[in-house]
Image 1 (spheres, one colour):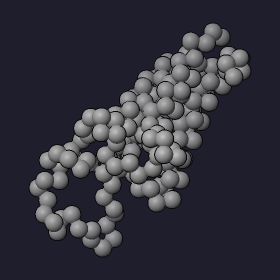
Image 2 (tube, helix red, strand yellow; image 1 turned 135 degrees about the vertical axis):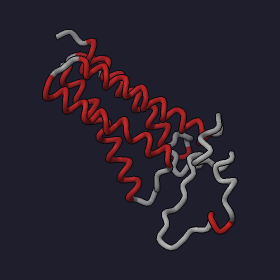
Image 3 (cartoon, helix red, strand yellow; image 1 turned 45 degrees about the vertical axis):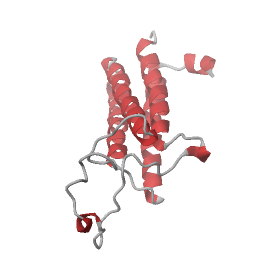
Length: 163
């Protein structure tokens, strides 16, 4: 596998990373269509993938090497968001009070405020695991962390690749 990757050009590596992010983003929308509503932190994690898709398209058009560094940096942010969210889900650290079941985020609400109204979207808390891989404890946020690291490595390989 490493021998195959080493033969890829800068363009191939950048496109592979951008297409990987496209796959992650499409997968998130498929899960959402299957009824797994995203929490606020899930939505935050989609933005870096959308951004690197644009970066990949810009690199395809311009071959500007600086875009490869930018792609890697955006994937650092993505992996950080994924790790933070996975840690919140696992209870390793507290998450934002605005989307977790602890903290002052929900404290000012009455019972009526918490009851669903007609047509309102289901409240999805950021510290609840809605799906994990075959009971292994790897959540969607955890997979985002891992894949973002792989995509970051691809962006860096593209940037450091000699012509």
